[in-house]
Image (cartoon, each protein chain N blue to C red):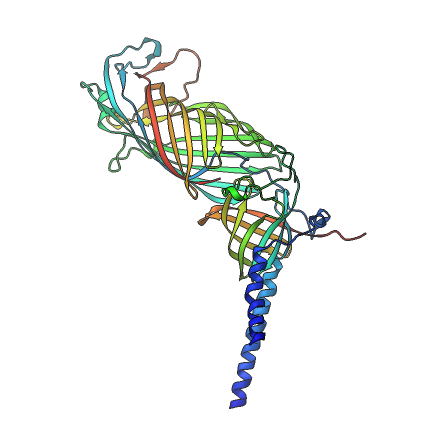
Length: 355
Length: 155
């Protein structure tokens, strides 16, 4: 019986004691090791210390305070300087649902490939359209964006990397029973080459084809993500699309402050005739403060408060839906024009994240 | 007939014992010192009560540049563990050998952000591991390559 007790003790109790205790160890013996066969290759990480949580899935609601929208008559491609307001209305509500999913397909230390999808709805409550075709069209149906995108992060070595991003957006005031031509899909892309000198800094330069401010543009881009030594302050910049400073209150709470450019080119089905696409070129600047807060596990709340400043709300008629590049300089001619008063905006969302 | 039964039981027992000890031997290939691909730390994996655990035994930069003292687990969400030294800290916990060179049911802790992830380990060859940390589903994860380290041979 005594032997049996001793056996039970050695079988069950001793291992438990061992798990709980950490015996003193001479760690200096590990200073003198070598590879059993060969070293692994070190690749630069896509993340740096202190980067904001990477959102795998995000569901959010965006809402703007009331503002006045003025629209011109259809100008038939006149210089934008010559436009004048023909009709104005209060827009008492602007907002809608935003859903974003960004799923890793391959995630290894030598390559990261992600695929994603996004949906964004913007509903305009135009109080008095007064028969104006553009105001009536915005009042009739909300704007939708449904997009697919892919991102590839390819480390070249332990410091340098390439990033490629491609996106296809299907934008317009379609409904799920009345889609427009898929030939009007807008394609964007970006490529960056960069370096990460240490694990609190990464920077990159590149170029993008983008509809971020409404019209098609080709612009250079600069990325600069940095975290301070104490891992409290930092920046997350992808200029000109967005630029933020950040402050980690603690490991569960992050405050960001800066701006983001947002927009796209949308087919307005009720004004598109004879195979042409009447497109709203919408672009806005959103200076804001953002709070990211851990809720539970890997679920985080994100809340934004800021201003929505109109950058462009103009209209083009694309002949047979064919896109064109207007450029930045010289006299700009447009089909029709709108002016939007600045409004406050708020956004609340929940994300499933990786840190 | 009785002799035959006894022989069958002995053979079955022997087979069971042999296959279990083979599995244990295979599972113990995880034991040793390993280096992640970022080459910042070494981890020593041991077997305790039939499960595999890994602790940090070496840091490339052992001193915290902000405090000038040995690095501690300052990002741990548990306040009481923030002052625990990183050297000796158990990053890998509760791994069980599942056969076919795979260990599962364990977790991996990332001291850089204080998060604990589900984890599965696969033996690529005797000296290489594929370590995949993930959140809930293996899709939401990342795989790293670890290499085995041994004591330097005397020349």
